Image 1 (cartoon, rainbow, N blue to C red):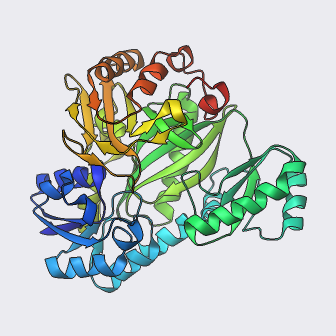
Image 2: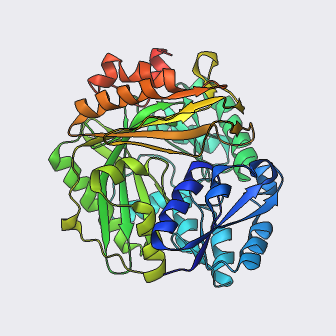
Image 3: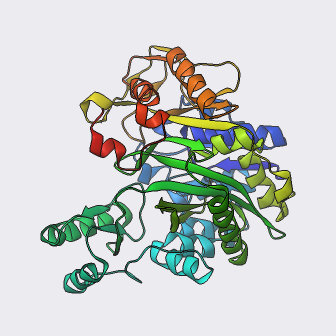
Length: 445
């Protein structure tokens, strides 16, 4: 096994990776910015090294500084977590060229699957149904208008190299198209350095379903699905597994097709294939070539440590898992706890945590990096921790989550705990009568 791994990330995911490494007996190196010196991931790692100032471009996205940290600490491998450089093909290629193991797929596959247009073509080639839309990037506005007429409104404009809702615009009618098309291109350029966009059919009442996979040279297995349909402006808030709406027949078809594609493209590591699901049909959306924020719900129902499996596959090439050994039990729900004021349009709420009491108890898990006295800075993503609850069924998981949210105390800053309490008690959530547009349309916040 590896002797030393550098974690090229921060916050809760860096803590999560450090814990997995410790269970493998692997030494860890934490990188950090100047404002993250007192962060939990820095305290838990065996070594730490500052790679720059608080701006992500100067630290967590600073490839030369991270490469220097790898050399100074004699690290053998890098775990990128999610976000930052986790899906950066250039970073993965530099590591490959320097004989440092990137814990993830090859730079070539990151490049192919990270380009939403190319990923869509690959998915179609291997038998996954895809959403009707442009075959490639669209830059000419007149060409774009013609395409929209053939697809029919509403349409969705998306940044070809983006994610997280950035550079994404919904166009409901032709009169809105030109302005939103140009705005999407500007946002894509600003956030991803690439103004290429593509256009596809927009679904009115979809669910967001994703399939977790682990793949080695020897075989690909799936760890069943997650339903991530509780979203605000394309940002996930609550995830659960299994999805309450899939039939056994649709579920089997979804898994079979996903495993076939992932296996045939030669994928190695953990990955997630995401789908839009509406009216009994699913359509390929994208593939994330990294671990997902919501991976813990899959872990608690399958009993499989996805991060440890990532590390094992990166070192050995193969996976020891067999599909017949993966038997999920019960139901799990995850609530993302953000340092935001939901009553003020989710305004970020940085500051010092003056009191912190985290819930515990039977089948209750908190993945986080906060503690009493910790200072939440305004420089990074507002998610500060995740609460995961497991039950024998969905009803029990909901009740356990409600109990756990009631126990959770974070003072000194505003958080989304109150919002989650409201959502968990809402009739639509309890009856699973919602789609990805629920919170944006119903204005229940």
